[in-house]
Length: 250
Ligand SMILES: [Zn+2]
Image (cartoon, rainbow, N blue to C red; front, side):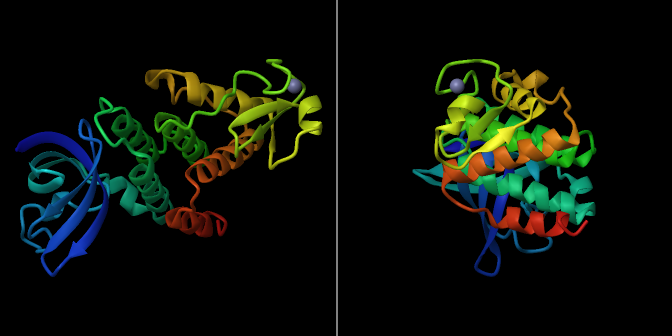
């Protein structure tokens, strides 16, 4: 069965001397694996569209659960991200997370839209990188069904407190009084970080990127988002370690 869709390459693996095995986030088939015959050959028509983060209109052939990529017309190759090692490292982390958390079936393009928006904002330097990283981690987690409960304290139900503590293993917040009695890893959130987390989780996509917070809140938000994602998916990310090795040197 022939399928026309749009998709972005999350991972490319060599398959023999000439072919590639691709992981693709599509707009209406979820994350799929597809063979691209001849794509490792320099002059092959698939070669320019099958690199990491290339976004294309695609024609795929599906035989049961196996896909092959027959044709791809490039829409956006994100060349701007490839000019900076740090940006490419962060974008590669977004791709690795998308391969893990991306939808298994049609999600009406929600996940793809989030990833494309994040890559575009990163490419154009439209938003602080660390804020963008946290935004992606939290929103991607919640799209995948790992949605933290940030409405009120999980102990007493209060909505505002002097300070709230976030428990990444549970995805809950506790007020200062309740967290004094509760064990477990937690991060005390600044007011800005908590407001940002609520915005990232609960706001519609068109308003998602329209906010800003101070540097201390960004650090705090980043800790919370990163620990939440790692804890919920129960794994570490190689590309994240690489990104941290670069940004800590700056
Ligand atoms: Zn409480």
